[in-house]
Amino acid sequence: MTAIAKQLDAKMKVWRTPTARKVEKLVADIIALADRETLASKTTRKPSPKNANALFADKKVFRGSTPKDLAAGHDRYLYGEQ
Image 1 (cartoon, one colour):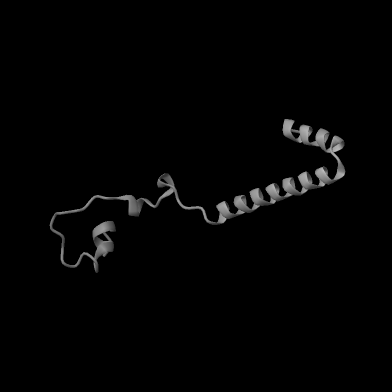
Image 2 (cartoon, helix red, strand yellow):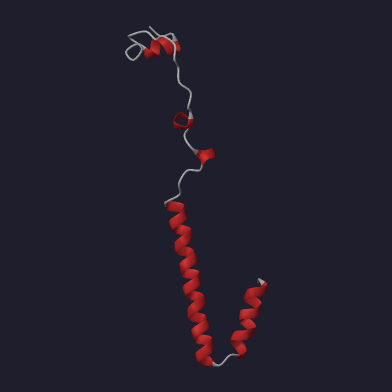
């Protein structure tokens, strides 16, 4: 048990019932909020630069001459396939 949990446990035993109930509700709300934030961050995670797709990160531009049929014959040019 963490120090905060031990402290809360000890305090709950000495606080008057209405105060203990309020604290219990607030702690439950905090836990629920943390759970929602954790779930939201897992489902809406944006890629960081180190996780980004390398294709979109590449800023190089080829300025040489290219064959007119580059798109149609890309397999041939890239892999030597006929």
